[in-house]
Length: 231
Image (cartoon, rainbow, N blue to C red; front, side, top):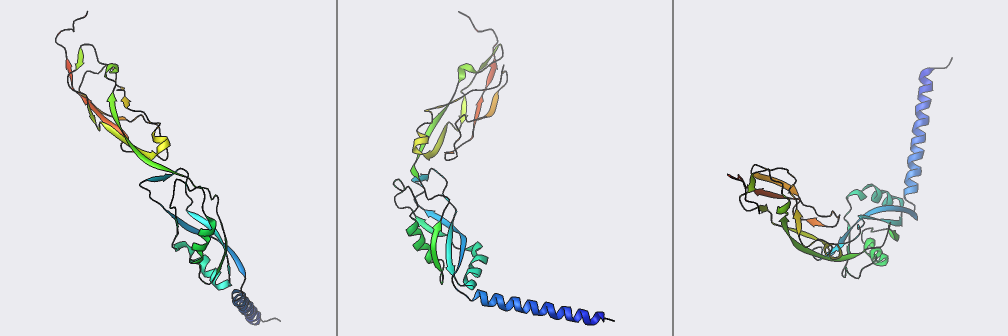
């Protein structure tokens, strides 16, 4: 009759032997060289962002193919989440049309001591910049189109806050914006003092920054004691 305690002891021995064999195999494998690994590495583009703006999204990471021993690759793959981004300098943004992979590879070599950087892979190496400009556009109200109730008139200046909007972005886009912003008061048959914030009717663009999204429009309203004379 088999002894359950004996079978359990044999099973434990087999498990321990397998774990030990796996451990020694792993240690031996990690000590070997000429392993290759592809890692995602953060990149930071350095340029004068007050004067230039990228017209297409810049990559946040690049893929790097590196070779080395198993220990270095394992350590780099585990602790790469807090890696210091490599800085890629764009010295002449208006003439830059692609990332210089050779220059980038040379910079990445410093980030992988004890390993070989074979090549860099990116979704796209194309980049493009435009000069960044700003324009200040005055805000106006289409007063002739304001709908007043019978016997009521605007009895004050039409106040605007702010009275102008600043837009900033790529020169080719900003030049297409209008010379003035015309607001239309949507309320109908107004007979009380008006004080509302109206949205700024400007085209939306992901690369354009608008100083204000709304303008406060206010004016006073008075009732006529007698009808206005007609011609």
